[in-house]
Amino acid sequence: MKTAAKNTITVVFLLAGIVGLYYILRGFSLKSIFDTYKAFDPLTLLFYVITVIVLFGVLTWRWDVIMRSRGFKVPFRKLFVYRVIGNSINYLTPGPRVGGEPTQATLLTKHGIEFTEGLSTIFIDKMIDTTNSGLLFVLGAILVGLKYSFPRNTEITLAVGGIIFVTLLSIFYYRMLHNKHFFLHIFRFLMLDRTKIHWLNEFEHGIEKVERIMIEFYNHDRKAFRNSILISILSWGLMFGEYHFATTLLGLHLGIVEMFFIITFIGIAQLFPIPMAVGVLEAGQISAFTLIDLPANAGVALAFLVRIKDILWAIIGLALLATYGFHVPKVVEEKYRPKEGSSR
Image (cartoon, rainbow, N blue to C red; front, side, top):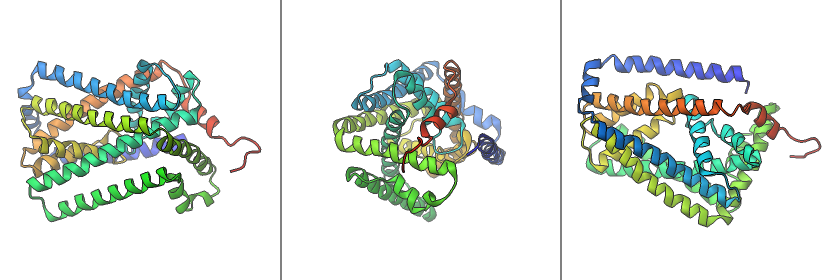
């Protein structure tokens, strides 16, 4: 897909999000939202910032474990920087927190790691992250459903969403552990491989290479896989700590069930194809807070706090990317261009 088309899509989705945000916020006075910050405590803010940074470090540690299982040793500080860069691109582009992976893989080539190999470690990490986040969502929905009464439509939506996720996840790991492709199978099931679109053909070739490495990891690096899951469980605890401090800054004292629900809706908002989840994050928090009998303006205030944190990470990531000077699209095109005489 050409850069102009990608930029157009980004702008369209961003404008849609801004319009949605306007209609959401016009029902609230700014005073009611900012009054929520009266309980702001500098020490709690410090704990919040420390927890956010440590959480990012733990997620980088998980990626490092995957990298080392593949025989790659990159300084931890570099991996941390590359993750921040990838995260910033993901945040600023439309889609479910994806887009920065090719940039991360490109940065790994500085350490002699072939682009496809590097990209595969990133996607393995992404799938483990998705697995844990999804299970967190399912568990949270069950716990909240046992404690609160939801509208029938909400209950059905959450139940169907959970069933679909668990089903897809089960199929994914079943196929991986039986040396079968998952994403490539979907690609061909949709008959996208029969098109004559050049970039789609290259994309299929890239999926096949990356997924072959992922299959090898799940079947031969199970110790690293297990350790990655354990690290993810640790990240859950830190995530709860992050949102405990965030809600405390707003003068709220929530139980673990309520925290589950709030984190779940933040995760759902990030799946929508809108840059920075503009409008969607606020709408999600209003819905979550309303369903658990909390003030909706506090949900907007929390969404603003989360957004400020993400924007700061994005600015840091873009500043770091500017210091490397990689032309990412050129590297990706070169790595995925079929070699002469190669057969697919």
